[in-house]
Image (tube, rainbow, N blue to C red):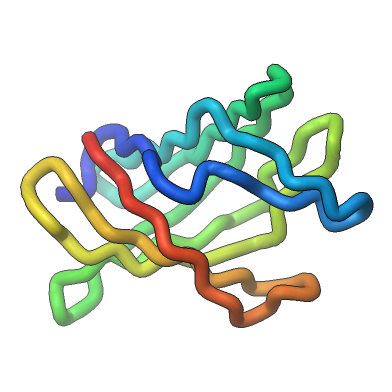
Length: 116
């Protein structure tokens, strides 16, 4: 389930913590190898982008736990560190709520759906 690239298709906005501005995302992609080492890439509609390293592993219940290893940084700022727990919906789709690990929304979870 894990290996390869997954594309987020829901909740495609982020908030600039300094200005409060909502920023629309054009592409949000996460890719992993067999060992669970991966990378997240976000491209906003204004052309800004960021990339960060991630790590993933299967939980005993079969879900995938992913964690940011660093902040995803762009010229506009950075995303807060987060972790995801992905539940398989089908061979090509996963439901992956993301929980903020820092900042004003610490502990807040945001739903997200990904497809291969």
